[in-house]
Length: 452
Image (tube, rainbow, N blue to C red):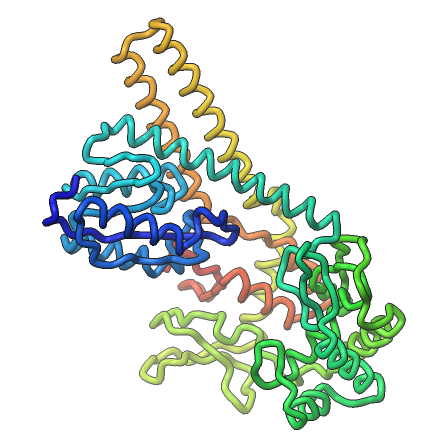
């Protein structure tokens, strides 16, 4: 393959859970060794560390690789495994086929395969196998993590005040644990969060990120229930403004504070939330409303004028009164919630997709047995496997389309609307990325990709 005149680019990637043999360093080492042995000039190795192969977002090295390909600046790509480029069969087939059509060689060292010598059928089979193996690997990793949790082994980054021992169990980091105890004692003495973080900074005590302490960092410590000696998930704030915790593992580890102390602090924090005064003028549709004339976002003027205006100074839209638009939006959201009959859950889609891939691979295995036993000829075999690839492609396209137009659950809006909790309504709208505008007859409508 190498004749001394070829110039190659390497690409390596790891996701969150890394097998030591698949580490970034080992992948780079294998690529360097291969190029040296074959007399290939390695121009550079592009690295995506701790990036999932199922999404392009955040994979900067992958985007650079795509740019090199699109601009004809690469003729040889070297990887350790094909799944480093993409984990999902639909994506991987597309990438490898594009590279082959552009005359770019792609060589997988560990699989000892070069796409220039592979048929479309072989590329499809490799992609299917890579996706199937990665899904099985993900299930094994998840199962292993769950078993570790049940045994009391901490599988996440330890909270400030703790470290993990060689077996993965939490043990105190004494100096940090004393800081945590000081934070709790100061808070129970009546000190404010600002008082606490000011004292910490004045005494040159570094925060968990080795920077300055602030209100958020102090509050996180006060809400970390794992300090009581059992592993709890981060709290979730309920509709009643109380903090709720989920126990992850009931295996004990050294406590930094007592459960009684934690509950006292939690009660004070919850009381402070309820005492926080509501804003006298809260325009919950600011930056949510879209101007019906120019398409810019609208907001209420300061001081409050009880109306929303377009942000664009040159726009001729005169604005709309709060008492006109706000009830319409609330009514629309409530009606949507009341008539909603089904939810589209991401995990269910993933499970369905995984089952489809398993079914197709089982079908392929049956075909291979028939072909090996001479029950079908090569033409029949290739035709059937191509049908499998077509079905997989259709499944992927259908899933991507449905996920692009993910249905929003409106049921959650009903309770805050009935409670007149406009802050919560706005929080949900921002999370769901909802925007509204007015139609020609001054009726409110939700802005979607189809009516922009």
